[in-house]
Image 1 (spheres, one colour):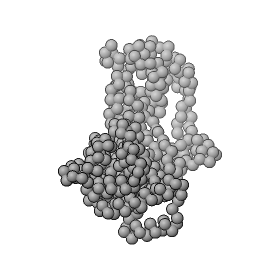
Image 2 (cartoon, one colour):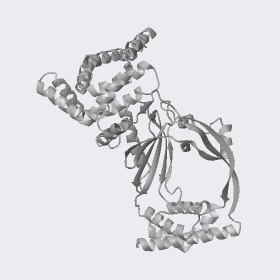
Image 3 (tube, helix red, strand yellow):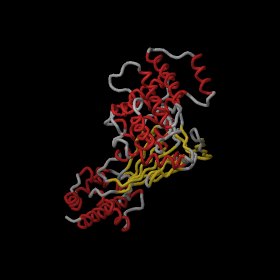
Image 4 (tube, rainbow, N blue to C red):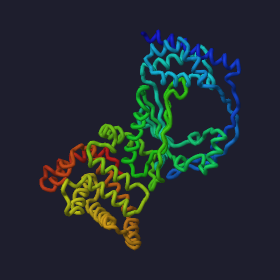
Length: 458
């Protein structure tokens, strides 16, 4: 059966449905009433670089038209129609899916612009596309915390924008009964995590109806991974909303939320970072594992990235430092190396960072200091207050912070390991061989320097 013939049958079904609904409205079997809603508006919105936005939220009561009818009765009549069975047979769609689609069309007729001749034509085209699994535009907005922007937005590439939150992102309408239930249960209208949203990734792509929203969510997660490796920060996903470009509301779309911890460190992207980030994004994206780092085929990369994220979570200083050092161990220690761990880490990390332009002596001292903290934690201890004060003074005088320095080394070496794309044994051997012969030293420098322009050095 041709698409044109199927379209004609769908048009007949829509007209039949419209006539049934209108008849029931005339007979007062479908009635409307007005429900109280709270419309929450945001005033005096101010975006704060380095923290959450400040604003005043006010709510006012409004009335919204609602429809009341028997779904069972209405669907019973529609299902008995000959045209319903014709569409079911011709489309090959299962009954549950067709019924769900019809319900959304009924709501579109009642709450939208109605099924007039123009809307029927557009709706038929959308339904045929849906049945034929043709791609439609899908929009995905992912709310983030732990990152702020100096400029209004970064246009990363066509279809991907990183932007500041706006007052409209925090406005919503809610039924009065639901709002009262939330307060009765001691739940605030907006959870603290949503109020902490400081940036949003807006992603637009063509997606087939058979593809789940998770396919677009995966892309959003990859962008978050790249942001985390571009700049040190506790960037986390709060909520994602989806909207597929159908004329029928909610024929595709939805919302996913996450439970997140408050950020231990907020990173800020300056306006001058946009060009560098785009360059890093375009080069690094191609090197990333298809399914992200959490299930990377290279276990040492997966472990190092996980430890990097763990170290950026709130917690004991010693535990966070131990996580960062564990990430470096995952990247720079060969299997079976159990002795002289601190020595090997100092030597290998300083060699790589020196090739990039860091002072090797400073890197060695930083690694040595961090490893001693890691050892204290590994043996069930904590560093003394006096030791912490000495560390703070030592690094503050240099305008630095030991934890940030170690996190930075791990971040850069992790990015470099992914870009160079060698297995761990070969990567470590390449570093060690550079201490022996000049040609090996040149090979290491060539591998690093050829990628230096893409490295997110800060």
